[in-house]
Image (cartoon, rainbow, N blue to C red; front, side, top):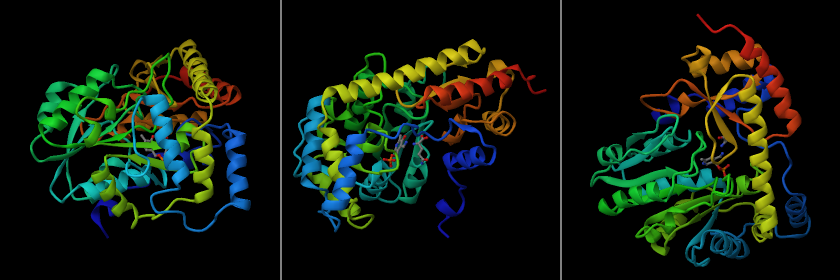
Length: 386
Ligand code: PMP
Ligand code: GLN
């Protein structure tokens, strides 16, 4: 067995969803919305399955989707991308990440990672043979400290892997933070692999800023997006990766031997969806912001300490004021005793784990959020652990 995969357990999302099923819990753990996604986009996919092309599409993706991605990023992020040489379709952001890391890294290269980090990152970096160099974020502001970047980067750094907006903590790294990281990438000749899957899920008027738009970073950024998040269709696994032609060419070589292609019918539906008018994107964001506010207010009323959420489907709750100092134990107790599933933030740290913050997914209907709050009221009233 390869030790990277032989030595790890099932992902925390899978483990918590299994516990949620076993305990008939309200599942606010794994991040997926309970609305079914836009009907017109799903109808396009159905139509394409029935009457469209169901054989292998082009390896880099359907031209119509690659054009739609370039058009979409010009419209929303002011980026100029050549769909023919700078955009590739992948089977979700997960495949884009795996492919980028396999394509860019040589064994014993160093990769800068920012913890807490999405669970796939570290195993993929290790499996590619790289040495992880960790930068740590801490609550409540989760800011990137320059002295940590200074210590993590070196001339052996090949890649900096960044997630913005950030899952699990729901912060947006602003232009200054991106410029700071970009500066280190330039200084050490490193490539920024930027997981921007939450780019459309930003709240309170924030607009997504891509690492590609930072001075000097246009041609040393691999930008990763996912239709799963843009259209609330997390099971579709249609992702896109944008990079300068020489980088994209090599990413394509990895992609051709990982999945080779992505279902063409879903690709056509996503191409249609990306061209939807601004109303769809604005109202989608407003709906999730409203759910965030409803859930955050309900939690605060019950006495929970809610951390700010600037983006994503998630908010954090500080459990220290409740007398808890172990988020994994808290989550187990919450799902088993009170029937609500959440995710312990410590699962996303490799070292120096923060153990007092728990992540809840608020991308749910009012009825689901209210059911969860009713159960959380009992948890709030329970005596603190000894
Ligand atoms: N990166 C981050 C930060 C995510 O939150 C997710 C999924 N929630 C992914 C990657 C995976 O995206 P996909 O489902 O498109 O593979
Ligand atoms: N990205 C989702 C989350 O953060 C889960 C994805 C998965 O289950 N692998 O909850």
